[in-house]
Length: 154
Length: 232
Image (tube, rainbow over all chains, first blue to last red; front, side, top):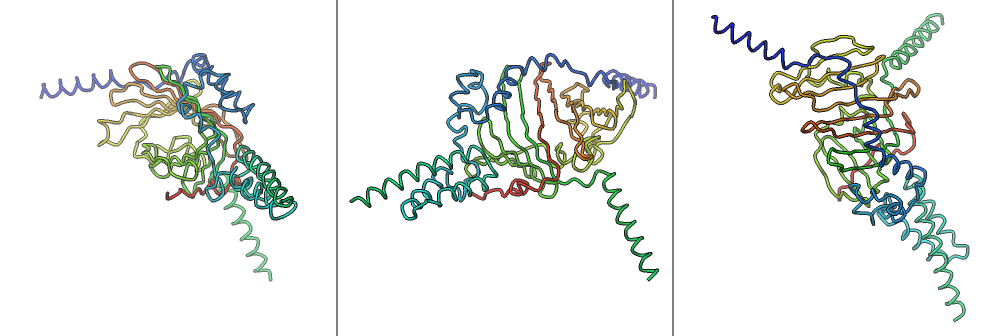
């Protein structure tokens, strides 16, 4: 019985040593340390927020830390990835095809701008995809018009 | 006629109070959209920055993250699986140990963030005390999990979740979660910053998530709230 009580006492004593007494200080942290740890990342974050269309190359020139950030070894993918292209078509190609064919067959080439509109809405007004779509439309229109001009003058 | 008027008035009162009480209980919100950034730095100097937009709908129970940096892709967590989607196809899927039901989005929308959903997790409330303006509670894991799960300490300030301290079974602090700078959007309260400090070998790793441009119960972007995971 005495042995049991000694063991019980020791167990309770050990438990009382281990148990953390909850107090408000447990929820404190060093704010200045947190800020200094994230100083570089915060600068990069602010820059991207202010320049959402910055190219990956420009970013790497300005922020050498960008190379070290996980994910950035895949830099060619940055902003070259299609997000939600219609029918899984890349946005550039989608509008390029529409505007080339549209300009060749229809004077006024409305197909290109319509395709840009489709990309704009299907990607939920994504600026980068829309920009790619506009470039696809412009390139397609020029090529379509060029082909038409050559064919007409032959 | 008098009876009809009485019934109409009664119906109005019932409907009004049902609506009002549901508002008071914080149960009326069902989806959230927010810009986010995640900054991470570990004790070895490894750094991560991820930026994008997150969508969560309480009915679809999918956390959809449309990332814009460093790679444009969509990350979807459904149940315990995270899908990485690029160009409309699944690139990879990984297992998550965090459940969607215990995500900050789900808990905030259901009004359960103040105790981090611990009352429904199998943990039991041990003690409650007040210290320096904080209400402090301790939670013990289920008996059969005490060998590998430690206690959880929760603090609230003005009925908002302030912090969580996770202990291992030997009562050593393994992580702190701090919820800062709450915003209130039509009664929906949400922290705009979540700081997570994890401890490994007595060294600190920092993770700071910031939320901005928060929209509650938005009607746009339906495709993201109910994102269809490609079948490849």
